[in-house]
Image 1 (cartoon, rainbow, N blue to C red):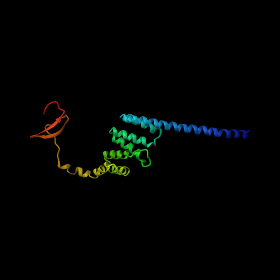
Image 2: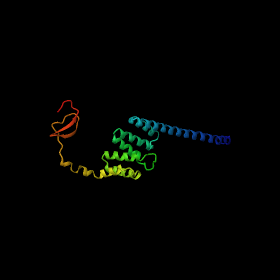
Image 3: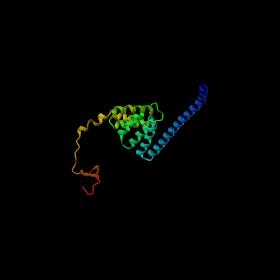
Image 4: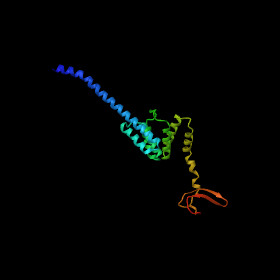
Length: 196
């Protein structure tokens, strides 16, 4: 009796193993299909300037696969477009930590991350990312000017203590801009309704 049970179990086991393996492969296929679907939706929303909605689509990718670095840098890029440099920095940091291994991530994200770091006051870290971008995209001359600008930052502010800025009698709560000397006075553009 035990022998006949063993024979039946040996015959059934490969079938069960095949069924379990098939379900696992099908489950993986469904996950990759869903990831692709959310990426395409996010890219379309991004192209339509719907950055907040695109972030939600990319986060759905991460809910399926939290190690999907391309979705993280796409979230960072969307936050950059929304002028939220703090969030952009957080997502770029996470998405680019293994970027040198991930060929799916375009190099321009390295430049964008350096820009975000510089805007957030992290100049030394920005220099590292500008240098990495320059190594990967040597034809882009913007990087040299960015690096030079960071190195010359103290010079930019060197003589600012020599000048004092003060309000004039003509200042108002309205938008006043583009002052130009004219004859013996000053003319400017203003949003005020009355003439000064």
